Image (cartoon, rainbow, N blue to C red; front, side):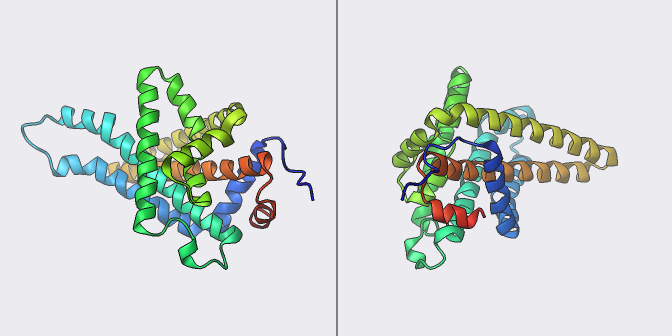
Length: 250
């Protein structure tokens, strides 16, 4: 039987539907995972330099180091782990209900190490691209956008996951870029409105907590978007696994 989905257009509306469906099916777990991988590391990065301050190092020097190096690395690694767990849970919802736990990727210590290694490779590559000329960083971020869900869903190694992501995104990078820009602008607008609302309260603690909540929600939305883009790419380019995708995204 010919799968008519093969060669179908990449549709942003369908991606958003995928993301909303994944969230609806697993909202509580995704919220808790977002706190674990995004909010907690962000708080540690923000307050650890203050608690462990060395009087010989100026506050400006500490803040510069955190902002330029540590903060982006922690944020991107947290996003990588969040994508991996969301992908794993979405896969279990699709076709892993009857699998033995040992046949699933992402759960053992080795799986975490593999995902962290992938996160380090892609993070350093993307950061290097942005440092050089910005454009290479954008291209790499688009090319490697679905490396994490590909690794988890298809049980791939680090380099195989990167190659798989390159192949899947391929000629769809223009559409992916447009979708990401639109989602980013909406996210910036909502973040700005949230910041105004928290600032209006006039309480520094509320403002700090509100900023952390906003960043956590933004990171969770980005992780969901990456996973949804992966499934849309598989469905539109390869038509597989059509039955499983139809079941979970019905």
